[in-house]
Length: 296
Ligand code: NDP
Image (cartoon, rainbow, N blue to C red; front, side, top):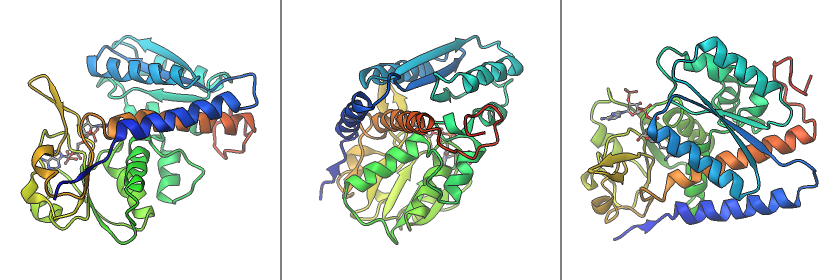
């Protein structure tokens, strides 16, 4: 059996086209604007920022990139976020991660007004996700993964999903999202014992550990759905956390790297930004606790 390849590139392109139409048909003089705060000059981060900017422009959104030196202090960065929170022309704010070590990531992310937190990384929005409350922003990568799973038309209810990785930006939120879809979820990490045995029991595998081609065909139950989040570079070539060539012979569906989860992440970020824009245009009550938000 050879798996159906889930085409994230095409699915994301369809999303962006729909979004472009929604933005051009939206009855407003303004367009959604995303602010991307980028600290330092990590080459991979620069590529991700450029991609976000390119696709934002493609769908008719504004994208302001605020590039800051590696040496910026935490307080100075918080002040910049304050300005973006107060700027009514900015609808969504993201801080490109990772931040330099001298900056407390949680403190910075928590400073973003939750109604502009289109990456869904503030404790407020992650809290809403754990309550399965649709008012929050769901972070882009997990949201994109769920869309790809839905594109298979397989009923997720009761399926055993094994998530490899427990990071705050991928592993934990996708685990919560799948739990909210009535999956039975096992979250694994670098200290997990008998990982291979656990993965073998999965109907759905979400590989997000950043270990090139770690998941082998021998780990996979026949017919499992495989979502490969990993982005690794081996000998100058991109590959995922799953050994694609061998696993595709055993899985029912599989995402490729590149062309799987990555493009969906950007599409979902833009979709969240549009959602933020609509809510802010409607003076939506976001119930946040930021004194400068329009909801007060
Ligand atoms: P992190 O490094 O923050 O987290 C990796 C997680 O994997 C940790 O929980 C770690 O465990 C776990 N892990 C590491 N090694 C193993 C192992 N041998 N066995 C089991 N678990 C292991 O990475 P991210 O979550 O940020 O990203 C994961 C991957 O996804 C990366 O390749 C990244 O580039 C990619 N990525 C892709 C995105 C996309 O849009 N396609 C978006 C974001 C990330 P522990 O907690 O114990 O250390």
